[in-house]
Length: 338
Image (cartoon, rainbow, N blue to C red; front, side, top):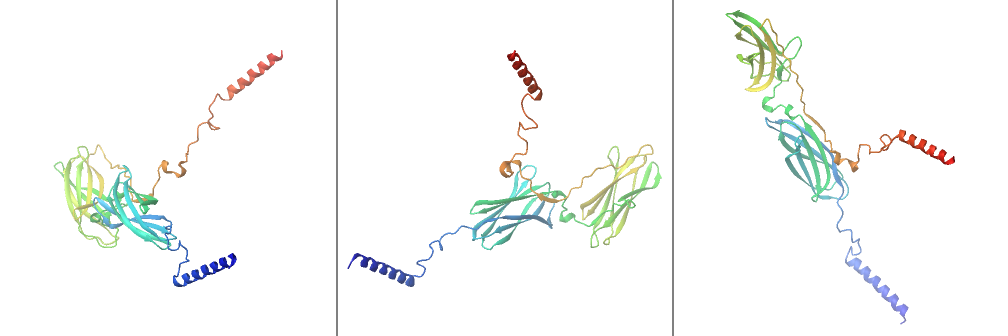
């Protein structure tokens, strides 16, 4: 048997053995990477929204609902974790932190991850969400909430407020009687029910303070009857104070002992001097806004200020010195030609 015949026989034998192995052991020729480890698909934070439930607004705290939408595509991504923290907008201190185990993301698309964060009902906070995969940070997003003190606690919520109309002021004062240096005043407060249900369990406390000394001269409380939705009602009371003085009249609307609204006006009983109520109030409202990143976190760390030595601010001696130099050079050339 020559060498070529032996090689051909060996090749045929190897082929036969391979075919037998394929039949007996399926998958022996499969791609070795088919059952091996695969890279997890990309995932990031697509959107963050913040809301609150009125029932979650308490006297000192409020619970914010933070919904983070996590986007995923490609291969399954295991061990996904979301960290949500509230950072005080003024001090920069972390006030609270919540961690949510998202698990494994398999489907393409977005997954909503809800989280509740309880903070003090005052000031503002940066609500930061950080996405981790296998304890590795992969994305971050943030929003800012401000004006939390404007949220009304559940116990103080009522649709009844002091009316604020030019023709129907919230408070009015008139003189009922004057005798023995004492003046009796008729006090009235106008209240409007802005809600959808009748009101109840309300009272108005009238407090008269002498304008110069701030001494309380009289205090009286009047119960408020039921006010139907959209209606305005007036509650009245009387108070007697020393004559010849000016007074501030404060009215406090309470529900079951809880202050829900206030109003103020002036009562001028001094004929030689008058006072008025001049108060500047700044409305505070709850709002959610995008988080403003620090300058050190700008993309690429680009500078916004123009570098020194630009065309508009060139260091050196200026145009005048250049003209002097040209004149000196011309005189030197002229002297050399002589």
